[in-house]
Image 1 (tube, one colour):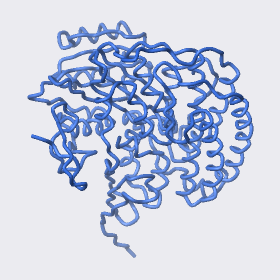
Image 2 (tube, each protein chain N blue to C red):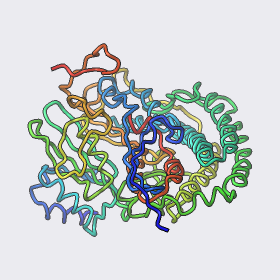
Image 3 (cartoon, chains in turn purple, cyan):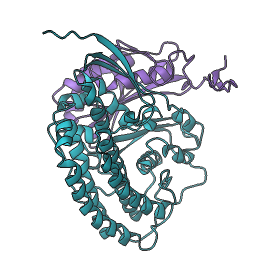
Image 4 (cartoon, rainbow over the protein chains, first blue to last red):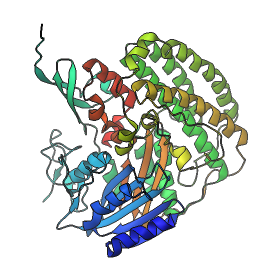
Length: 159
Length: 366
């Protein structure tokens, strides 16, 4: 695994801002967001990694910026890789991985639904859990909902 | 003579007995053949992940009972493991054994619901009565230990809240002895049933590569020939100290997914026997401070729930409440492959294919 990490760091240079090996079979990379798709593709196709299983993808909001979290697993080596990046609140856009890994399709739709993060190149980016006419992105830290008094409309965003 | 067919869009659910909850499917049909399928979910969405951000870490455990309500203990374990990793909490040995014992009982109970409802889906209504008869026995055992029958809330950060009741091990062993014979009965009733076989074999085939690329887990991926079991690849709790096999079938059809679950119940029996034999004495809960503040960071946990890889991911900033709790629900990912499975299938097979994924809408919608 050591050699594979070195090759990846060499291949992407300064795009990898931080990394750490948490355990013998798990490594975490923090990268800059514009290399998101390239890193995922490299991890999937490089024979030293072969991360063929998209385990998880999610977003979180710190109040200042969005974090994006991707977890991959390799059925060949039984290794886990976490890929982390941050997005600004003003322009929450990141490349979609749905073409590389069909399994993240619904995860990306859910994160768009909850946080309003745009996954560029997603084949079907629309709300998945909330109704199509829902206003706002409820998992953002600045989203405040108050009961509307109408059970059919549910809580409404306060602006 | 040429038979002309006309395209048609029909709606299944959200209130339909075969959808196992409030799931809606929009189907585009050409005669009896399904051309495309779009699942519509979110009818049970409660915003649990957001609710968890507003509460201290340990207050969130009861919420997880409401995710996958057929395997509440697996969810409890998932969130507790995640918090333990975040705060580097040690778990006493005896608590680990108790956890594994309860998880495997839970797996048997959950697979029995699958067996009963799957039989009913395919018209074998008798199976439901047999499966629920044994499920009642498991629920009685779990009730004796935890005090609840469905929403147990029985795993704590740092162990389990209390020791097993007196004589519990023997009662479980008695049940296992009986249950092994009952599995043979199920096989006679359902597995060897010719109608059942012809309705499940070669239906809804999920190739190995598709299962991996879609991130399927649990019996769905193991029915497609990938030995992906978190109990083996992550070795949490004491799964590295018990002997058991991971049943894998290569066919990838509805029949294979059914066989995986049947065999898993036998393996669970094996695990339970070893755990009861090897369980050490000692404390079951680590003492933690009243206000629990894990250091800042990101942690995730992986648990093999009866439905597949259940993963919790938490972001902490050092305050008493989490910044973010994310739940990777196995049913959510397994359901996303349904449109692929239904392409070109017959309408009559829809119920069999959907049933073989064994989804729980509580954790899909969260």
